[in-house]
Structure formats: structure tokens, C-alpha cells
Length: 221
Image 1 (cartoon, one colour):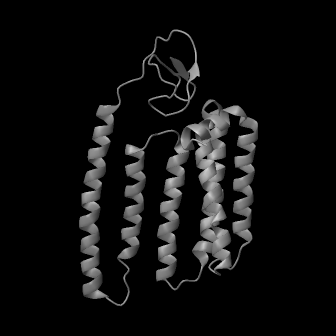
Image 2: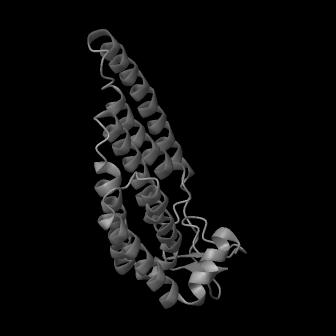
Image 3: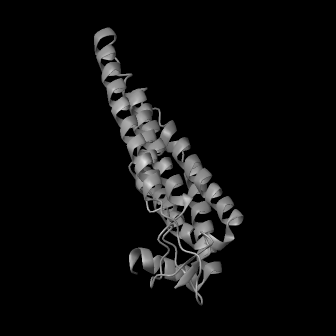
């Protein structure tokens, strides 16, 4: 039995993890507040996401037909297809994810947007603006948003550690891309790496044992 500082509820089951947000529970005495039933709401959202997927597939099929019929020299239909796929992936994770924090949603949306913009860059002439500027700028933005969320919800800060670690790994991907000469203007990428490492290290050091406990629960390391 324990209390979740993120959801502000008391779980009476013999568990150490909150069933709503998957954060580590604080041990306490006898609880009186049980977690709500969210299955019905989730099923409605899942049905809505399936409707969106069906409509997106129909629209994309129509766009591909028009593209190949009217202007086959340039596959412009791929661009709205990427955008719709980005929206669906974000919606799917929002509905079916573990909801440990909004950090996971932010990182997923960032990855989908980076992928879509990189495809657009390649299709429009491969000028490198996606890898040189947009990708590191999105990483910096995601770091700052998560930092603000931690400040606004300090009781659930440990649930954002995994998202910060993922942002560090994604930012470090610029190093092999620089060696492969895909990243030709590394200044913004270096800034993204520095900010990601600084915020993750700050959370890790200030969090102490709670941070290590969260990482062990996620990765068993």
C-alpha cells in the first residue's frame, strides 16, 4: 500500500508501482482512496484512433492517385502522408501508452516530427536543413518543455528521467552523422547535446537514490 505523488491517490493493493502513471509509490499507512476505473474512457479513445486511421488511409490513397495521375514527376503525396502518420503515432501512444509522464509523449512526437521533416528535406533537394538545424532545435525544445513540466509538477519529477535519457541518446546521434558528413553545421547539434547532458545530469544528481530507483525499475540496471 502506498501513495502516488504524481496522481495524488492512495493505492491499497500490495504493489510498489502506481497503476495509472507507473511511478514508484511512496510507502504509507492505511489508505482510503482507490484508483478510478479508466477502461471505458480508454476504449472510446481507441475507437476514435481507429476511425482516424481508416480516414487517413482513405485520404492518403486518394492523394496518391491524384499525385500519380496529375503530376507523377514529384511525389508530393508523401508529405501529407507523413504528417498524418505523425499525428496517428502520437494519438496511438497517448491512448495506449503507460502514461508514466507527458515526457514520453513529447519524445515520441518529436521523433515523428523529425522523421517527417527529414523525409521532406530529402524530397525537396536534400539541403540538410533538417539534420543541421531542425532536429537539434526540436531536441532543445523537448528538453526545455520537460524541464518546465518538472518545475510545474515537482512531486512526479522522477517519471521524466527516462525521457531525459532518451533525449541524450537522440542528441548524441549527431556525432556519427557528423562523421558520415550528413551533419555539416554542428553548432546547434553541439548545443543540443550540451543541454541534454546538463539537464539529465542535474536531475540524476539532485534526485539521488530516487533517480537510481526509477532507472532500475525501467531498465533493471
